[in-house]
Image (cartoon, rainbow, N blue to C red; front, side, top):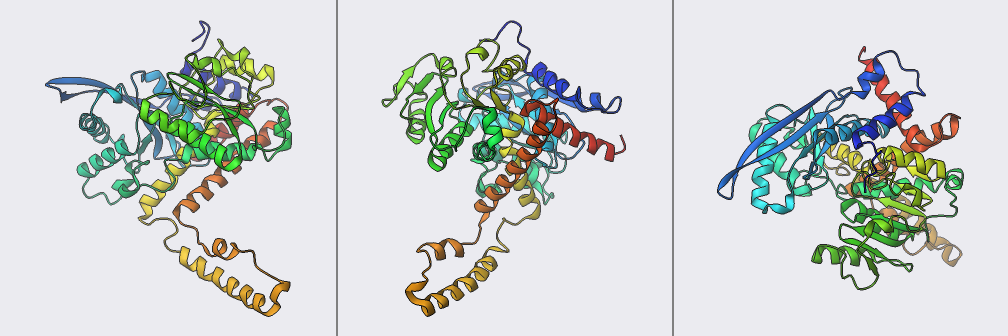
Length: 476
């Protein structure tokens, strides 16, 4: 429940920006230039559906063009409004700067509940929205490149890409007008899992630093850590699945729109996901305690809390009761500015959204590069890499025969070593590298400056400095 004194999402982003720039020495006017949204386009269009003309309202906001194209998702939700879209566009600017993706920030939204429309109706709505944006260059491989967000996915991106191609028949780079496409329509391996995978890599990097773990009152590794996930959509599902299967984390709570599941022994993420897909929610799931008061499970004791759905779920109304040692923001803006202050005073460590969920835009960047280069990653070098490895294996086998039992290769060494990296391995490698380097740039500021006491301020400082440097290079 929203608290009376709670700032809006847009105000929260501005408050956090202000907190960071107060610690910087930016030239007069540059702070304002970075803060403001460059342009927001509002479109109202009609589509003939179910025997009458239905009117829809959509937005595309461009926050900063210090680098082009600008990048940012398109969300479908009835809650979409101009303020929200502009706040998300600002976050995209800072997020891209932090992870060194060469984009400015943008965001789009359409006021529609995708569940209310059949697939063919949704296609007509999406194509008409895309048409309105494309003809104004608000979708363009070199100017503005959307991606999926809440309520959209590969299917919608394929429709948008096809609409762009129909309107720009001679553009050889047409596929690069949007990312998050299906593999057979110019997408990239690993894009669907990317944001959740990025959350996993962010946590792994955090747990590599004893000093950072100590700040949250944690120790050891991810193995056995109790995790509560709010929202088992694309991001929450992949983050929970990877942490459970690969890192040994115990998922003790899963919160959904119709309540929450809780089990001290741990929930089977795959089984819960299957139940949700079949029944539309977690109600009735047999192997856990169910409560209709899902929000109350946010306040359960756990090591790591992963809010992965809506903004503002942790606010002044519940911040005091949050018991998690570490919060990682898989969603955009799940902790309000007021709650952020309460949690910092309590000693809770928050890994901020602009870093934690940057896996999506990072792999979107790889997809955009793939579309522009017109070749999949790994195609040129994979077999050559395997051939070089074969030389080493042949030599080791010769030694093996020569030395006999005195020296024996591990049974699966040959198979693992000989396998050259394909597109998925290369994408994961690039994402892991990106998340590590971005985290290190934040923690350097977090631990290196006495006036910075949290990772969010550190993230803003790193990203705003990079945006400011870009503007200076442009002569501003």
